[in-house]
Image 1 (tube, rainbow, N blue to C red):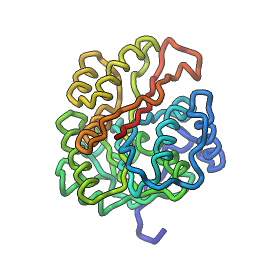
Image 2 (tube, rainbow, N blue to C red):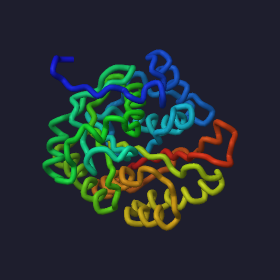
Image 3 (cartoon, one colour):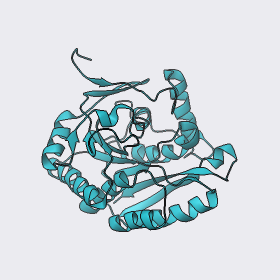
Image 4 (cartoon, rainbow, N blue to C red):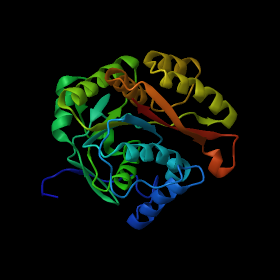
Length: 289
């Protein structure tokens, strides 16, 4: 990496996922082969990009709790082929920085190595949609995007460039604007691209209640009903932390004709701990032609 290049450090390594490269690689492998995972590993030789899938929803908790759910999303991307660029959107849990922030760094580092940010594409996105601003503070401590990077590296050893976007502002209006801008770039530039929406579902409620509430939200996601998802999250008091990123992906799918949304896996932390009285729930979804 050339001198003067700004690199975001893996500040959540050792917390949400292992800091040791070998241990991290084994944890990722185990996520795919977990009893609740997809049951097979990504192809060693990446397939050609097919355009069959435009994006996925993936959770962002500690890998021990949600890695096996995230693995379903990444295996779907592996099967759909290697892209050139991945837009990764996550909620801003720390309320730092600007409302919608694309990262200023040139690369993101994990224990598995560095992944380049597509700065030119990020600049085009910010120029096209003025509510997307360059800002590093929003990304400084945030884990919701960081935990996706090792999965991306494991899935695609020749890792595609990324455009990391942190969302503190998670309104339907903002999501539609960002989604339309991303879709416009993908269409007009002919990009081989994916959009990853990082979100967990219900937090700290009984598993039965989490499932009941979350599936109301999932039905809105499958219908690509942006306003409906937002209204359902508010009206049903669903503690889903990333409705904004998911609504962006929904809008991208609407704009580009990816109308088939499949629920790949739904699970909760109680599946690992055995405690179903208070769980965090996770969903993996794929947006397809």
